[in-house]
Length: 199
Image (tube, rainbow, N blue to C red; front, side, top):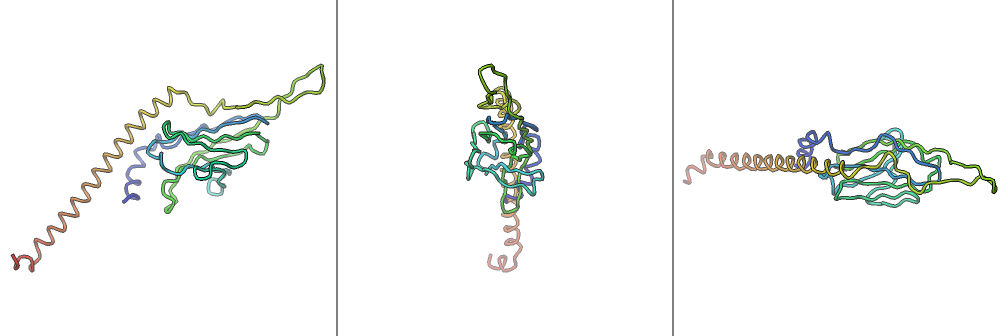
């Protein structure tokens, strides 16, 4: 029943299921945060960050089940519908393609996914008359991944309407299914010769 409901409801939210910036810039030695915004319908589902150019060959870095992995951590804001991945002490090798993933049904391998390309810039230096050039790093760099509160509020209102509509449709489908089942059983009992003779 859940599988059928997902097939019916998923197209209705195709415009607001899971979104993320296409590209995020980070600075060598600093930190960067990747924000993945999702429909509140999926607030209880497992979220993951996967790394790899091809999604079907990528490896899971962190998830809501295991949110810590060395310099990388994941937090899930279930009120705003955003899960964020922070990478500290950025290295050049951290650059590449990442995937925000939501596991809808693990048995049937139905996932929501969207990619983020992370680019790590070279370390910046400045000239000093007092000695060698020190490295300048940034504590937090989130120029492309920040989401304004106004945008979040508008998205949340839209998500609430979509969620309400989907649940109403799901309830109507469930009522129709139960009604048809009960009517079929009643019709079979009424048309049974044995039942008519007993009556």
